[in-house]
Length: 310
Image (cartoon, rainbow, N blue to C red; front, side):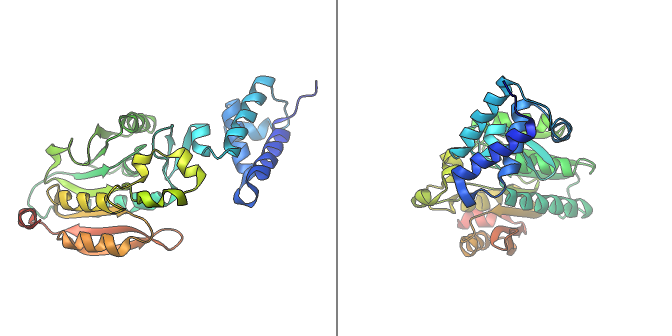
């Protein structure tokens, strides 16, 4: 029996992916190579060195199973079990939201806000370091990547929460995997973080922001890859943004930063609800495609008066 080499199988797998998806597949050879790496347990460097070596029957069968899954629309990240994100590598698994490349810009905003906060004297007169809180954390992507980027900064604490117990387990695992200290808790938004009231410097979230009525417009890959509770907001798209902005007033220190990811058409609505909640310096920030993707604002302080008027 003639055994095919790694390179030959990657080429054949890429062709199979093209046949399944046509022009919709942006980089089929890259995907086929990642599937092969997962199938044979080699990193990219060893793949290159061993590209002309034959592959065993068991590894070949595993590879074609993976190609078949990808051809049916299963997300690549779920098949290989991990994804590169910002400056870290994250484990992903079924039932937990898969981080998207645009959310890497949320990490950048969090890191920049934390560093700026660290350079400032505390406006409320209290000493201490910089506290970051990431809600709806999923795999821990934002929290873990921010903690990794700030690992050399003094006195930075990172906390993260998610209602999904599986997400909590994965996020904790990702923190350990990337050798960062993140306090991950199962939490309905702020519910598990009462001790952080009045002490958060950067509050960030990529919450569910798709209206249930838009479900049919989502790609097969999204429907297969992400849990519904991580995608859909029962209140129509901005309910979580409103809840986080309002409740966040009790958690943010004066001058603290709120950063929320949102849908590309939600900028005006999210800005309005954040301004209504009493934040200042409210503005939208674009993603890499130039679409409004984030709202950033500053909490000036005086939370109690706003709570009375809510």
